[in-house]
Length: 202
Image (cartoon, rainbow, N blue to C red; front, side, top):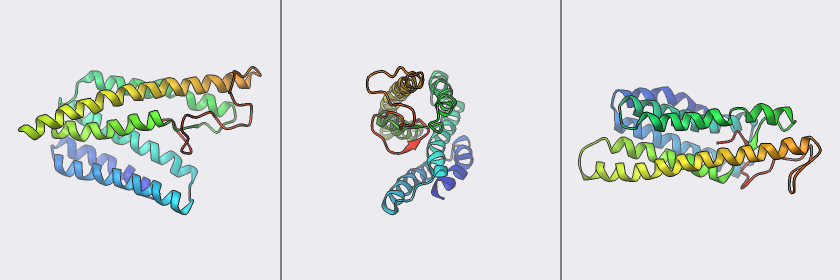
């Protein structure tokens, strides 16, 4: 339910960014982040998980990142190359789901902690870059810290993509009857770095 609420807030968040209602946009982003944390905490405490929730959670993260990218690019706060780099990363991992599904693993890989860390860096970066568009010492400080998070987040995002493709390659080799060392056999769960449940790769 909380993941669905986060998804509903995405277009409203983008509108707030475009009309330069930055503080309201930041408030909505904070709410989205807190609801994500609360949703995960409740799911673990009550031992309640669902396939729908596993799909909606990373989808909401991606949509907030994409909406922020579009808004900040239109406002010339971030350059076009950063938007292109992050969109290209999403396109790079798009073929993984059908490959994994065809191998009988349900179309998902466990979320790697590097991918999760990259996502968190980007979710920290964009609000700071939004604040950095304002004048004053606070704006300058926010811009510097925001760009640090953005660069690290983008690098980790791409590193995670490489790891997801490496995992997919292991599954393909295992499916052909020639698994490398440590690769799972058919019917096993996909390999993972630090597993937090089977979700769409981030």
